[in-house]
Amino acid sequence: MSIYKQKVFPSQYPPDVVDVIRLFSFKKAEVVGSSSLVSQKNAADYDLGEAVSVKTIDDFVKGFQTIIKNIYHTKGLFLGDIKCGRVVEWEVINPDAQVKDGKIEHYNPLESKRKLEALRSKRVITQEEYNEAFKLLGSTPQEFLVAKKEIKFDVVRWKYADVVAGVVLLRDGRKMELGEAIQTPGLCKVDAVGWVFNTRYTEFSCIYEVSMGGKVLNPVKEVLGQSLKNDMLYYASQGNYFKYAKRLFAYAKATDDQRLGSELTELLNSELGRLYQLAGDMGTIEWLVENESKLDDTRIRKELLGFKERISQSYDMKNPSDLLKTLSSMERLPPKGSQFLADLQSVKEDIERTYNLEAKKWLEEHDLLPIPKKYGAGIPSRKHLYEMVKNSYEEMPEGQIDDSKLVRSTNGLKFYQNGNDIIVAIRGTRWSDPLDLLADASIALNRLGTTDRFKRDLNDLKAFQNEYPPSQYHYYGVSHSLGGAILDLFLRLKLVKNGMSYNPAVQPLEILSKPAQQRIYNSQDPLYRLMGRFTKNPEVRESGQRQGLMEAHALKNFEGGSLDGLRHELIGAGLADLAHSLKPITLDEAKED
Image (tube, rainbow, N blue to C red; front, side, top):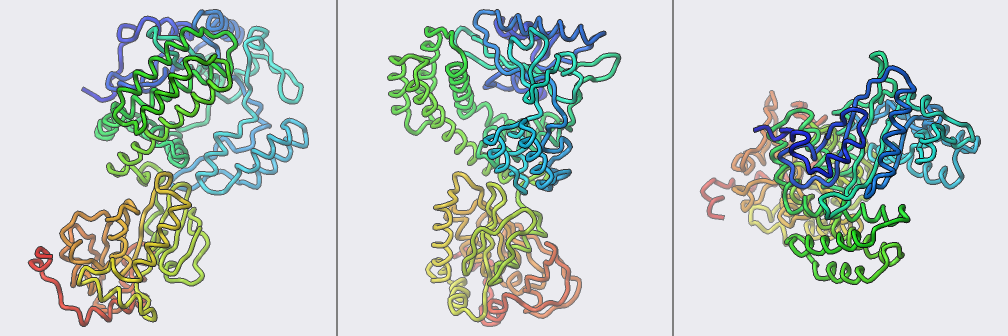
């Protein structure tokens, strides 16, 4: 059976859910997303969509008004956000702008800042809105995606009374009619919250694509696959790893990737998925408390009891007793009170931290974090990783390589940041540094961890991680020569998740272990012949011409990220020279060590 098999409507949906879906429908709104799939057990809400065909604009207006009235007047349903229409001249970011293959397309931060200034001068937005938006207009892919999510002054929002009247007052005092709004290029979307299963409030949302005479009236300029890739990058950069996994699952579904979908279902249907659903339900209660004046306190308290039961059954929560105590105290508080809301937010945030941290570990173990390049993000290309290693030898390294910014430079390490990805570039041997030479000599004896060079790098890495904790950032190592052996130790200590090295040194104890880094060698490199050829699954590249020891070991052989076979000076000359005096390690000796 396909992992993406759809549920049959209405027979495989609860009756109260079916009733709500029908209220959203012009004729037949369809369930989309994870709630529509037989395989998904922990869907948190119901996403709907309907392609609506009308003969006249007035048909849409009357039908939409009827839907909004029915939702508004149905007991147990609460009408939420209503979006319909755009004021195109108020857009700050080009709607065609996107991140593709790690690069931002059709986006100019300076142009967006000029548009923002124009909106402020015309008093379309307030000074506070201007200040908040201005801070978001950065130049990296992650900054761009945050800005695109948050800056939406062009979107027209409606209240119940506006829809009933058929007209809304815009930011600048002009009026827009509902029939006019649906003919602008943008989403028409309605959100609501409903009481279902007689146990919990849950969110419903429906997107309407309206056409007349075969032409879509409100087209949205988004390519599904690319939009999902952008969402993946956005959520991962925000530390929302479970949401990233859900978007990755949606991408797998869109591309009919059964293997990836099945793999992710293991995570989505796990205890972490139940915690994600629980936090979502708490967020729904939070919204109700903040936005609705007429709440059924009995239902709120009933759901609180449900929260306690669900937490007590969770084996992934580290401090369930504290959370249960907080929820018990909330039962005595009025739901509309500030303390109730503060306690609810605290419990929800604790649960979110738990499932995101555990989801991050799971995704890393399954090589889905950092985001793989084939999904449009992730670590830099090998060309740019090479540039980072090259800069690890420099006293004055480049401040930015591609989209990664240098955030710290030490004697042996360079730290490059791209969103929540940290690339640690580890320098190899510097011939003039006696600490490096002592470290080189220790490798054959499995004593690298006792050397001052390693201890210095270790302290520098730990100090950096105090400011950029691994719970919030992905650490990837890239290195050359001696740096490869140092990276092995960082990986053993779980300070770095994975990585890649060019012509790396290898301690005997690492030779038969499953590598957490990709080792790349020139076939003529002395370290490959000495130790690399005994490691598991090294990537070996033929140089195409005969080279001397120093030339074969040079980092610049990999300029551009690949072996070019050119003769360059050796940056890590110290280790290559040392290779002359080291006795080669045989496979039998490696096994003994």
